[in-house]
Picture 1 (cartoon, one colour):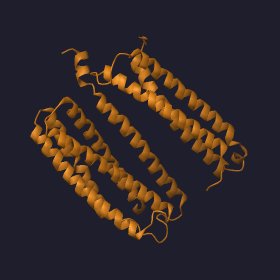
Picture 2 (picture 1 turned 45 degrees about the vertical axis):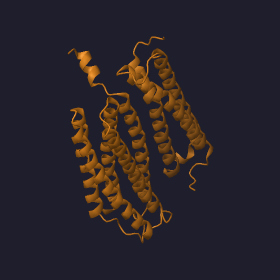
Picture 3 (picture 1 turned 90 degrees about the horizontal axis):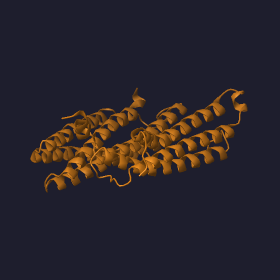
Picture 4 (picture 1 turned 30 degrees about the vertical axis):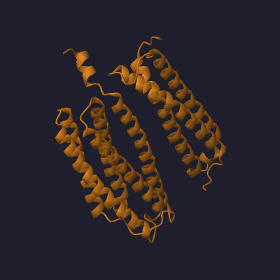
Length: 125
Length: 192
């Protein structure tokens, strides 16, 4: 069994890092698009694609770091079960949820980034 | 009792944390719906669009007040179950479920009435209006099913598993009722 120094902190980082990274990617990306498409002539001169790619890369790295933290806690709680009394059961349950949600959020971050970078900016359907 | 033992005893079970994660996901869903509503509203010159009457306020407010009041019997059911008063817990759960079913029936009747005078595809306002109200009604229906399931389980006695289920369901209901207040506020916002 792997021993980790601060499992609670790692657990919460593993659980919250990916959803927060996705939220920041969505809100900042939305703000950059609004600035690009509704702003002054000078704001229309910058290209959105490098911003979207950088934002997606940072969000994906944060999500992957969260997944690594969740994996460390998962390994350190091997042998415990989610139906065990708290706090062991809670930690085991939440780390399983973190492993699943991090995977989903990583896919969402990548798909969102690819779509935002690939679409023609400032054009409504 | 030591501080550690007290902390362990007051720790929430995994079932409660599962519901907390679910509620967080649902809060995100409604956050995006509220955001969409505000975005569409800010992009439109007329809200609701010309030809669509403003929403009526009296009935939605009364219905929301009735729904929110069911947090009391749900809370009472949980408190009674914790004290081992199973009969009172069942009765409180049944009262809450009956009021919530009445709320849902009236809400769906109003929804059907609105569908006859306004098509969801007619405008962005109609689309987000029906999506928001429909999503909330679906959450109320899910909560009622949870309560009925718990009521049937409690007829066979109280176990730790069922108590955790009741705790998670009570959490869910308080969330749905908080959502009801936000949904009706957004629904009636054109009147402000």
